Length: 441
Image (cartoon, rainbow, N blue to C red; front, side, top):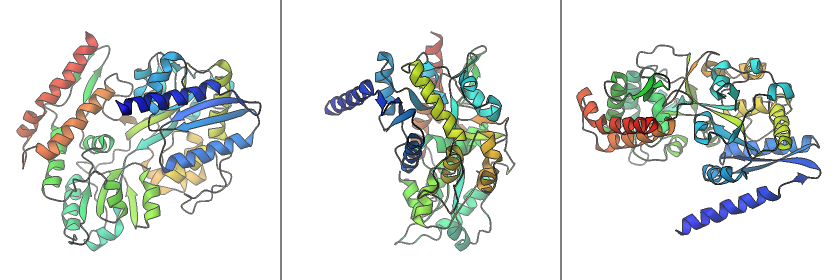
């Protein structure tokens, strides 16, 4: 109860700040909420500060908080939410009716729809209206410790999951009592990372179909999913993969050989000083799946709490993000000269986030970063996560996967077979079917 009261008070305090937010020195104030609370959020704050100092028309008042979702749910119905937010496109349906269309931004600014990758911009459309401008592609990739691979006699990072297992066994053999070493670093509790690996086995979404033809759960009879779960369980059971939750810190401490994560890990590893590399995730057969984008998309979105005035001001900030001038230097430079770069390019390159803005992708600075070039999906790539983009069941599918992966790792049978997986997933298939049935009822 005390935690609930504290949450209500904190939200009320933030809302009171919103209600009095007017103009900062005569500027139009844009209230901006997001959940970027880590090191990347500090870089975002520095860029917002640069925007505020660069002109005398708009002031962006940004709040970065772990209570972002709670704040939105509390403030949106009372029309007291932020004007501008950063939101995953898969949550668009969750806030249906509270998001303000951005369709006219291409008339009001120098931005052009054709300058954005259609694979991603199209994810932010609903019923013919555009609700988001791509901010960040959170794509998953394979990180590897070069020194551990060399010590284990492995010349190149694996391109198949069979090769991942072989490498994990050899690297794990380097472990000592003083410093445990694990060849593999999977997170049983990290949905995005697990799903990115599962889908590289060749499976489709956890829920398939569409509103017109109907939806169905896709756990049973799914051979690729079964293969992924068997592979994962064996890594844990053989001791090649730790069961700790803080795998990032173990990677930064030089205790993990191979792992899957997003671009946000790069800054941590740079600061740690370990000798690491980044490459594409393996696949079951080692084939190139460049037309599959493993990850999700976060967008600039506006809420219905924004007035016409603050919406116009927010559009100016979004335009600046893609066409303005960013910081000339920041701590996370990785020996890159950011002078003259746009904020969008600086954010993408410094944080190792793939970009949906084609002028940035085509820039010499972006093209000089080989890992970004290698990982950037094609303009027509199909985006993969738990469900098709925008599907109502995204959160439901993610929740079910979180349950069954952790349960499988700790309680699934040893040396599992395909039939074991089918028996294990029956109750979770039923859970997904219940969510679908509720939608139709």
